[in-house]
Structures are given as structure tokens and as C-alpha cells.
Amino acid sequence: MKTLATLLVCATLSLSAAAQSAPDKVVYHIDHAATQATKGLRNIRNHLDVAPETQIVVVTHAEGVDFLMEGAKDKNNPNVDYGALVSALKARNVRFEICEITLRNRNLTKGQFSMDAEFTPSGVVRIGRLQAREGYAYIKP
Image 1 (cartoon, rainbow, N blue to C red):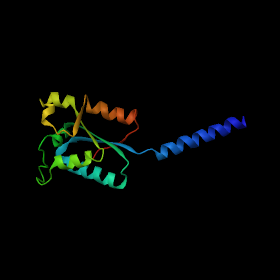
Image 2: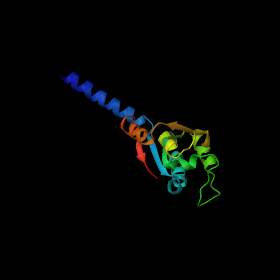
Image 3: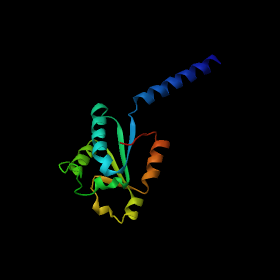
Image 4: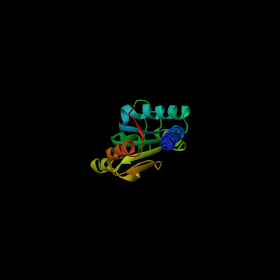
């Protein structure tokens, strides 16, 4: 009985140590580019500056996809070129995903978007799965 208890304690400590050494995983949810994109991209840059090992996925849908369109700029600050900011974060292993349901609903095509972006069948389903199945923390800027 004592050996079993010792094994259980060792296994628990081992799992705890593994969880502490694994990088954080975060999903950023953007559904309105005009109010979230610049702030969200800044948050992600700051996040990686402090915790560079963090795995980050940005999932966009609805009006949130707009900042990932080719040539997109911040309407409130035209000096902010989203393409350059996204490329810089992509170089830091951030994944950007666009909801294909949004494309259909808004009559958009994949060719209208930055090559740095990937596509997912449903943004909402993707966010749910990242949280529930893959242990991603949720942030909505």
C-alpha cells in the first residue's frame, strides 16, 4: 500500500512538473477589426515580448477578418499597416485563422486575404475546440 501511495505521489509530481514546463497556449478572438485589431496585435506583441515561448492562435470571424485582407490599414490610424504587423507576428510563430463561414456570408474569397492567414471551417467551433480540447486560454482584446 505504501509503494502504491509513493508511486501516485511521484506520478502527480511528474505531471505537475511537465505542465509547468509546457509553454502557455492562448487563443485571441477577434470578431470586430475596427475596435480590436490594432489593440489585439499590440497585445500579442507584448505577450510574446514577455513570454516568447507562448503558442498563440488568432481566430477571426465576422467583421474581425477585415484586418487580414490584403492591403488593410487601421481606419483610425492609416499609418498602421496590418499586413506588416501580421507578418512580423507570423515570423514569431503566431497563427492567424479566418472563418470560412464568414467568407460565404460576406461573399469574400480566400484570394482577398494575406498569405500569412490560414482558414478554418468555423471560427466559433475552432475557438471552442482550442479551449476545450487543446487547453488554450481565451483572450478577447
